[in-house]
Image (cartoon, rainbow, N blue to C red; front, top):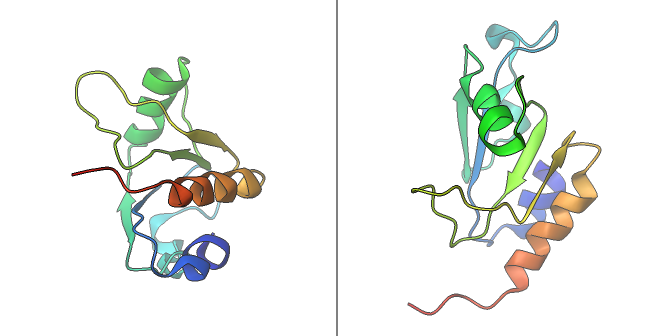
Length: 116
């Protein structure tokens, strides 16, 4: 994603929130490679309790468990107030769905800027 999405769209006004937590052996925080997404537009968060994954499973996907290795793509108008915004695109795993994610981001970037 770093190369295909961020590096190839260096001027794109995007924000990426990467939430990391341990799900598999080798996912420990002390083994986490922050260099995977070094772009300044990426905000990294470590979620020791996997709260974000549980929240997305319950509130967005409608099941009890943990969402991980997934993406949720929202447009610039999405607001997390009151009702949950609808994702433009979502999927898992990020690697398996990278073409869909990239197409979604490119479609959003092709849209005209919203009027002030």
